[in-house]
Image (cartoon, rainbow, N blue to C red; front, side, top):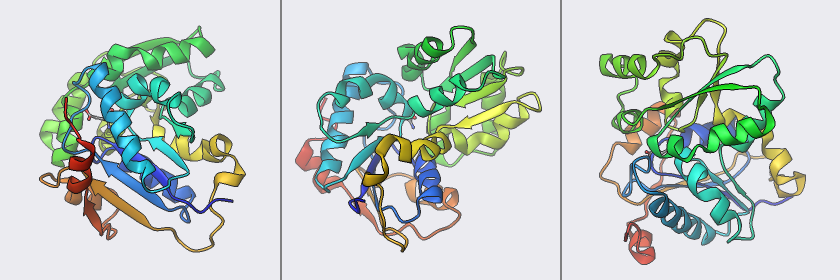
Length: 273
Ligand code: DGL
């Protein structure tokens, strides 16, 4: 058993959808969350930039003596996980593998839709991992570049969000499962549902990670405390809507203290590319 915190990071508020699912299942874990709001959005950046930002995020989290890191970001998982896994000795978990395992074991799922950022879709990471285990799958990829910025803005259930999701969902109505390949997208779940056939499954990668965490980390890395854990949230820029979106997402739970990571950001030379 290991009571050190788990580190998590994303470009902004999206990774909190993973945070929420992990805490639902493991409320006693301590979490250090980094939202790299200064470099948001990741989805439109080059692979090289994403690798650098991911390394900086990991190095920031390592200062807190974290026992493992969850890259709660589809863009960073799809373009940087393979690289950073070989650079650091602690376990680093991305958002793709647990979902791919789940789909590979569900033979009733044949047609899969993947909605994600432009960078994630360009990397082809989802489709290639899925097809390795299930070559029979029919896969439709759909980049949705407007959705993460809208989520950061808190626009997840207004008329503009409905129109944007409807447009992106063209051709995806009859998929058996829709993978929300960007961690911001669970914020639009209700609208995605309106654009899918009734029995289609919507896959929140945070739920998949939470279900698979013990398997990934092993029992000895989980926390054995009987009381609720603590979370600390750091942002690389506080001039954003993070707080209001986060409070809504976490059902008005008091998420303070949010600590400003600008000092660290400077120290680490964040976003220096
Ligand atoms: N939440 C992110 C993802 O899962 C990043 C979105 C962005 O920064 O563009 O891809």
